[in-house]
Image (cartoon, rainbow, N blue to C red):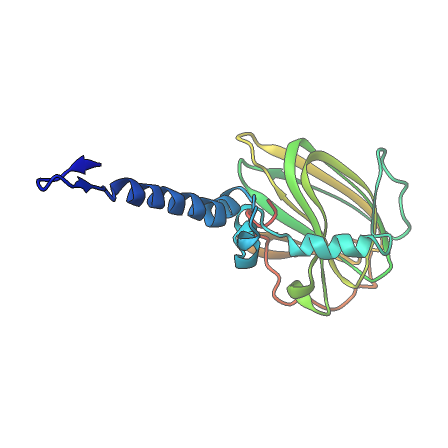
Length: 224
């Protein structure tokens, strides 16, 4: 505020403009930036605009799997190796170079049981999920996502389809992973950057025909 040449006081608008700009910046941060970058959404605008999902992506596959497991037994994890289930017996081992990934699936009919144990020489990122033959990848269900060196238990197929794991080595060392399984598996397949490789199970004749429409190896980001 100052006196002009005519002796009257001049009121500067600059502080008002600066104050208004700061309020606008703060509002943008609260309404848009914070929900997208941190998931904190005090006004609810971020959720309405889908910005919260940028910070906290919704794993719809896992949501479907969790909802199913609330209704029925699917994945029964244990602290000790499970007893073998009647049916096929399989052992598979792979070396994962740094930052490489692979997906392994068994074909299992609805209701069949599979006892399994996989162990890695160092923790790996894993995503245990299944794709039904009816509905394909649009109806994929996830049952466990995380980082570990061991997972074991009994799996009961909730539908006929392909069931198994995506693993990713997120370290700078080579990781060796070994899978042992027994039960109602009828065949298996590997999915990696080169594509799909069928892997028949020795001695299994009652194979289940079908395919999970649209399935390819999971991307490294989708299971994060």
